[in-house]
Length: 274
Image (cartoon, rainbow, N blue to C red; front, side, top):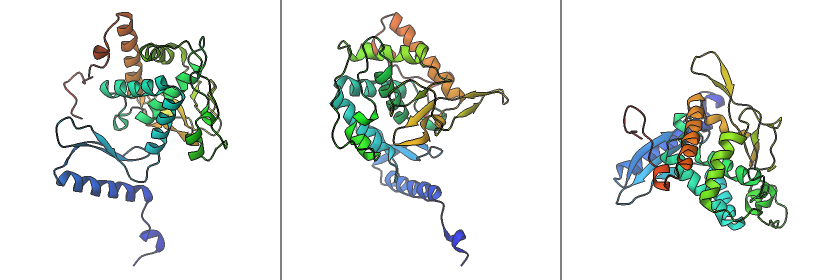
């Protein structure tokens, strides 16, 4: 019968097993097609495509808080300034179409890109001032994190009424030229530019030569100050991110259309399989 230790299942393995079982059942029903999986992520998930014309891919996860946190942040972005929510969704679309938001391939997660967008709107518009407040100004989200203020803080968005398109250009330029990848942490909790806090673990990435290392992006989870959301990124993912930022800047200089900006990315050896 074994000992208690041998009978206890690792929570993460149990989570993966349950996710595989649900995925197998859904795919076997014929109502869904398998797209991709991300079992190496902190919160394993599977992406499925419902059958039918015009279907939108969905992510399936079990006992994961991140989707709830992401949805709460996006909802409150819309409440605080509709442009903030629209920019976050545009950034998500851009990263998806350009292939830089797939965790299984060493990129940042969609949740991480939401945090990058919010952080930019807090600190990246130096001349206009912040569009979004620090995390305590997100009433619902801060209450989920156990940091409720008792009432919704009033926030008057600064800025000159820039369009979402202009904000997207500023977003790209901020992370291309202004953000310090080595010495700055993305922290929407504080909403201030500063090095990583002592509680936030650094992410050290091994370079392609197999010897040298580089400090990865530090992205503090506002719901858990000890969790670095940037640990999903590897050195190839960092280089791809910088390539796409440079490409976007070049397209801006040419006054390219949005459809050209969002043109799907494929590896050099052919169309992506995922």
